[in-house]
Image 1 (tube, one colour):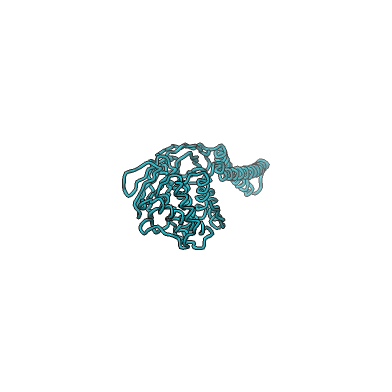
Image 2: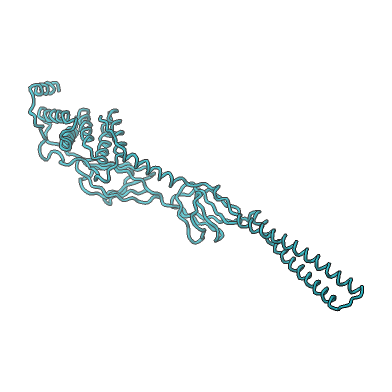
Length: 408
């Protein structure tokens, strides 16, 4: 190696031609790593991958840095990550002396120069290409090695597996070598909906692919009075029906059943993925509902009694008028007429007092009946929709914000 270094120093000292040497035709792919169409690019994802790549690069984890820099280029379309890929491949070649890494370093430097001929790091890229090609000539590295194309498959879903192009299921994480072109990838896990993805792989790229599988909903059947309302985590879902289960997201859920005039039914359930669960709900009348019905009944009875009293008052008045119509009255008949008039007045006053009391009791009972509603506001409310809305808003803000890219 000392002789190689000396020869390299001599060659650099005497000067090199300005045109940048290229590796021979067929020795490297002509296309850069995958890049998303302009409308699908995500600066937030690219920035996250860039930060992870810079961290891995600074810690000497060049394999991880390569994966993150490729993801950065895919999500941003900027030429800068291609130079960083060349740096990472060059460091791997220096550490491992793997000819494939030297070859990939040259390829990425050249692709950087093709996409950004006036880039700020063009001089460094040209110098690294010359040095790597001169080392190839001095050390006679032989034929260009094979450049691998890979998928880096991961998932946070427990027990996730993957099938590629209809093949057997393999546990994740999994990083297979694949031929360039289109591939169909299927992620599965017990209790989760399968996810199908179609990807186009370009030669010499490593495409990371992470799947977040959606759990299969639990099926909850609630038996309760037909007029009741069903609530899940404080949100009204439907009227309970024993013949139609309700789809509920698995996990710990609060189930509530509400019906006017009845105590609120609340229960916590732990629902598993794809689980069928049934509960029978017996609702008890509230004290307020009992009082309201009693007040309405007593008020109605009082109104009925007042009608009877008023009828007796009219009968007394009729009898008194009949005696007065006789003309000349002796003392006894006159006393009878006066007594009937007094009875009429007493019955009429009693009827008025009774009907007023009955009306007040009936009105109070009706009001108590109407305002007797279960306190559904005391139940929990699921924050998922508000949280997802806030997350989308923050993501939109990040995508709209300019990013100053640092360089490794």
